[in-house]
Image 1: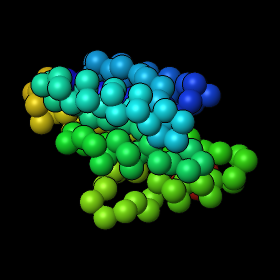
Image 2: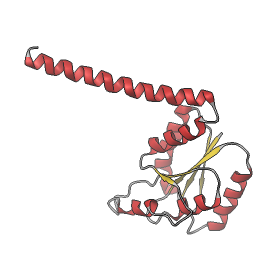
Image 3: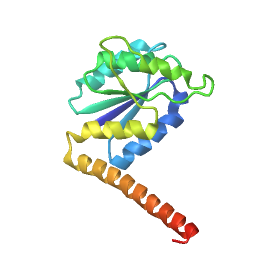
Image 4: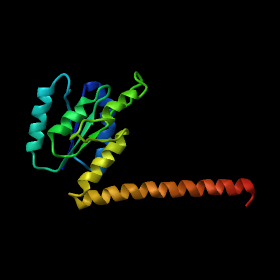
Length: 165
């Protein structure tokens, strides 16, 4: 199993590192590459051909902002699922995310705006191929549930203490 992380430029690396860290927590092998749909389309298509020839189950995560042609071009040229995870842009106050949300017919990458969420979705997709990964995803979800219940109990205790009940 493999997650291929494609970033539009090296400037996206700090955001991509968050995705990599989350994938590491699930024990998922990943590779990160730089390829621009606008500036290096031939390079991108060559990379995709290499990855698509690899028989391992895989998911692609694309990280590109502004005009996100990367996610659309990748999705149109692979069979594996594609997750678009555009980094937030202060320059455009987040408006550039719309280029990830609207794709032409026949192109359907999922869109997840948080790095950790993109890794989780990739883990869930790949969990269908690996029972051990399925268990790690379930453990991750269980830990979140336990934290919510603990937070609720803590706040209830604080409320009860201030009311004298």
